[in-house]
Length: 389
Image (cartoon, rainbow, N blue to C red):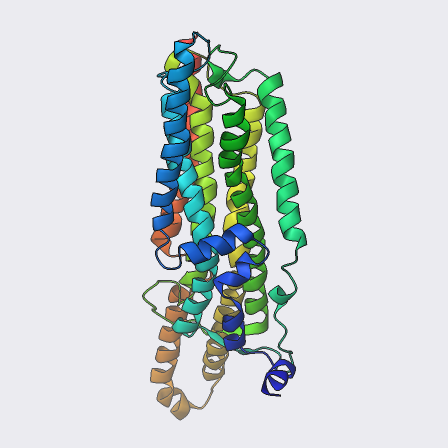
């Protein structure tokens, strides 16, 4: 009966906090559920686990294959090739552990952002007291998301296989075969699963980002905000939303640096910069991905902050106008100090009430990082043109 009355009454932010647990964002994601159980507290342990796993399976396995098949006299691109080894280390020992870390952190990060908002006391009463207690994400997660993730991974695998076997790859460095495809069992049973599990993770990162955006949008549309003036986070207590958005978009920035490496690495071995239609398309995707990950989670918070600031400024302005319209000389003298105080408050609110939930230093640092892959590639392209004049 108590649960039924709770469902029929108006929703509160505490009800949403009970819903927004990490497990909600791993619903129908068996790997995500496994990671929640395997790494319940210290998510950095997943980096160590992934590093050791890929060291053994990829670097260790690749070393054994390269040694065995080189002795057989077969021509292929060995893992020990000075052109291949740095790429392999970056892909398997840097990129993969970071994807695993982000995949593991994200459900916890979303939940933590909501709990920090509650702790900061910036979420007020519901705008509509008749709003019923039905949280939008209860109906969002369906089994179809799991099947969709598998379809995307399979399609991605087929497209990748088509590109590898039918198009020139500058990373082959003139060889017809690679160390990871020389042995069919290793290629299909080990290498493919360990590479494309990262695509599966990235698909679920996108799904969760959609869910997080829906959750933040729901909260800021249905609850009033209570910005905290001069809060230490320098955005009136709403920094948890901006912090989550910046961390989410950081995976896109890392993707941008990977494109930079993919584009410019052949230059180190005397080849032309790998700036073709496919890499240009990747940069176009990057330019779209960064704002797409950064802005949607914070847009409703931005609107709510603007509304709260404007409402307070309008209230102060109305009080100032009322005093300025006073014509009684005695009352004018008495209201002089009050007028000065209201003007001081108006300026304080205008300057200190933020309209975006981003910490100033964090968003500036993120902006610089986001521009660097494109800027670095542009400089490399000019260098390549100069050298080959």
